[in-house]
Length: 292
Length: 292
Image 1 (spheres, chains in turn brown, red):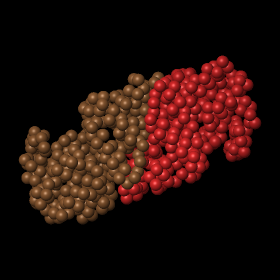
Image 2: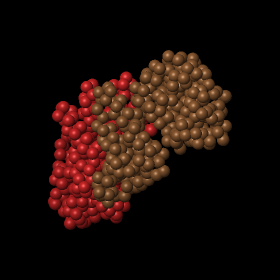
Image 3: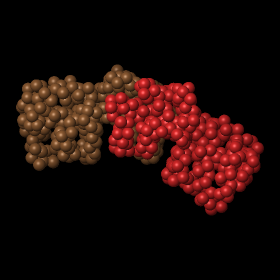
Image 4: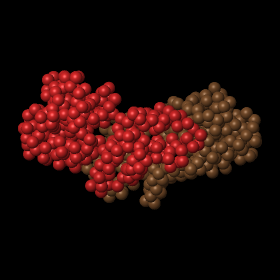
């Protein structure tokens, strides 16, 4: 494999993804807003670009792992798209709104560039061990071409058709369900705790049996033990995703009462100065409310 | 094995539990309020009693699988407890409040009867295939004696100490989390559906990956396909359990906002005439609210 890929965005998640691609033999040119974060990748053999457009090879792949909708829109300038041009494919891995994906896809088309939404379900350690999952959607030919690249990164790749927003809908739904799982465990564990049952005991029973799934086992441990540092995914990002979920739901007239509740938990956590903790710290709300 | 067990309550769950005990060699005397339900068990070799007290052998085991707190309190009369007497053990498998378990335990003690809370996590088909789980709590000696019996019924037995209410707290927490899982899937699947993604597709992706746990796979199928009949666990029983959860939480000053929301879903489902559907029909609320 010696395909050239421009890689834009080296945050907590972008860095291990880029590393994995380099280790799989792809030729990466990386760019990040804060250039110091490119050093580690340069040591592994990546080229470093000073601007997003500079990173791009005409007709090749561009992967973006950026923090939000605005960052993706700002990065994919007309200049960049013009250089990428016909045959170029943008693999958009950020968690952004379906609406933004659809808009970007239309805009890319004008330059002959294909857009594939490919949000990833994985915390950084899951990327390193290759156990994550990716949902993809967009143009069928482009999806076929990018599949070998995304399959390098995760255990499962799930295709949700040609609507470029569809994969983002699934990603938002999944993140919503993770946050909801943390909240429900927080409520249940707190009820148990105040009835004299250690949080660890209820956590172990439920996550070894009915709820024996990675989400409950991994996040349940965080919630049971109140260990919100180091933050793999910071609390403000959780609020961002819930806001996108509610916005996406409202745009098709769907009410999501649990999502409303989660939004309030995140907002309250920020009010209490928890912005540097893992998003699991939303679970502290139930303990606070119970006077613990 | 030829131990004598009085078995009280042959509902949807009681019947397969009693069958499993008979098939394991226990000598059962069964009682049920509606006597016709004893016929099947009689064919398998069970004796049939006309009253709960008649079913009891002094100093032996009594298992109760009754529909609610009031039914357990009404069934365990002083007459029954006097006959059961010293050495007798009540294995209380109903989903009742921790408070009722503690009260029953104290009352039983006056007659030399030990009380072991042993609520079961299993739908009828899970009892038949022996894949359920039981939480137990109560007097240590009594628990040791009943373990061989409860181990016959399920895959896992989890001991929560001497507080007779503890196992009930875990059972209520677990049922709350199951209902919360159905509601979160209902909200997520509805958002996907109105974004053009079939419910079945989002169900399959999420329950094969992040949410690959029996609860999500089994109840998720019900929620994805809206198949609420036949009812393995009827909707009013779901409301009963959520009310017990909220009551147990409030008794120790714990607020549970998701449980409040679930209570309203169940109440609304009853208002819409869904009392004969499976409790999974709480998921119809999200679809109703989305105009589907």
